[in-house]
Amino acid sequence: MIRNIIFDLGNVLLNFEPESYLNKLGYNGEIEAQLRAEIFETEEWLLLDRGTITQEQAVKKWQQRNPELKDEIAAVMAEWEKMLTLKEDSLEILKKLADRDFNLYILSNFHQKAFEYVSSKYEFFNYFDGQVISADIGMIKPELEIYEHLLDKFNLKAEETLFIDDSKANIKAALKKGIRVIHFKDAASLEEELKLYLRE
Image 1 (tube, helix red, strand yellow):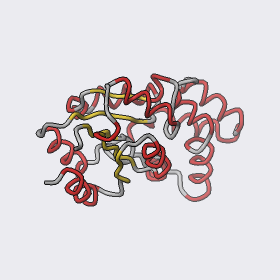
Image 2: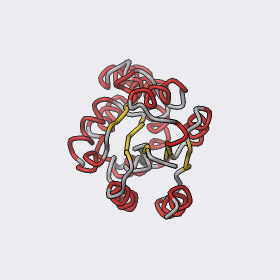
Image 3: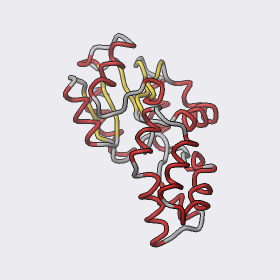
Image 4: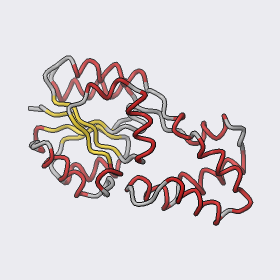
């Protein structure tokens, strides 16, 4: 029986779409692809998730590596957290689960500064009984240790726990720890898969 449901944040409850964000800032085509690769697809981005560097340090490294994009990198990172908007259809599912007798948790790779922004902005965090944020503990998904940390921290049994994430790698890692999983694609399919797991 499922008693605990764990949600990822990015692209499950919050939109995270760098390409669209860059387009809104006026960057298209080759420069959009370059900025996306040189910021959001770098080792520094993962280190921000891990909490081992600050955003200021990451920006400095990106600018040193791409001096011709110094101003653009600064502009992109000035308020990038604003792209983290609500996925309203997923939020409706979360609200329904909160009305039932489940323990709800967050397990997410997230930069410290960005998490401070979203957790103060959005009220849905009040639905959760606890959270594990990568930057707080120096671990990131899909490392097995972060799943062990979550289970231990909240005294959860893996077989009673369901994890929802949009990353196949993160899902596979959770399975290795005996956690039940749903690979998130969209809210409609999530709702159908939850019915199977929760026997509605």
